[in-house]
Length: 289
Image 1 (cartoon, helix red, strand yellow):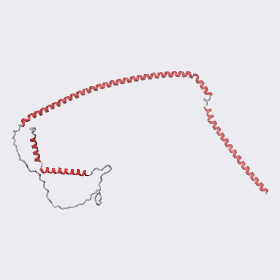
Image 2 (spheres, one colour):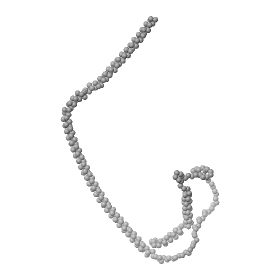
Image 3 (tube, one colour):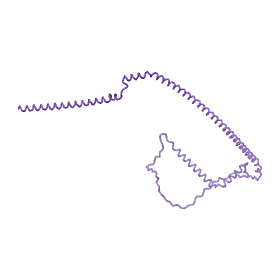
């Protein structure tokens, strides 16, 4: 059987009655007190936080001891174990729920079954509308899916055709590029061949002119160089530049040594002669005495 969609107040009343019957009044009051305590703590924290204003720029808040006597501050808190024996007592009973005094007069109205409406009869139009809308929505979704499938197929066909056209265009562009490169390469080869032919012809003409020009020039140049001494015998040049200076140097050194020996000998002879003359003169003087 379908739920009562035309009269929501009946279902709401039933739900409210079930909720109030399932929950305990003591639990409700306890939850309310916990909420009030949490709200009071939050307000107290906000008040404490708002007492001290924010520090100005360049300063900050620090904890300062303001008591009369100094107290040592340490990270560890002093602890002390204490024992106390108390009598056994019973738990405090829960606080009874506060129920305000009843005011006014209760009035009731009795409604018998079938007086307001027949659910099975009244629900048919709603079901017909729901079923019709559901079927219509389903048909629209099916038509939309078919249309999307057709669009995807058309798009796929268009993409395949476009890819084929792009591939053909790329093939034609590549073929045109190859033809253009081949044409440029042939033109470059032709220019290089003509340039080489021209250079070869110029070299042949230059060689012929040089041979003709140098035919009489070479003998005269060689004869002039030979007369000026540019062509010489390497042995003779080596003897003149290397051997003869060395030989003259050695001869000069030998003559200098001989002359030095003669000079030293003359000095020795002079000293001996002078010494003997002095000795003779001394002997003569002693004989006279």
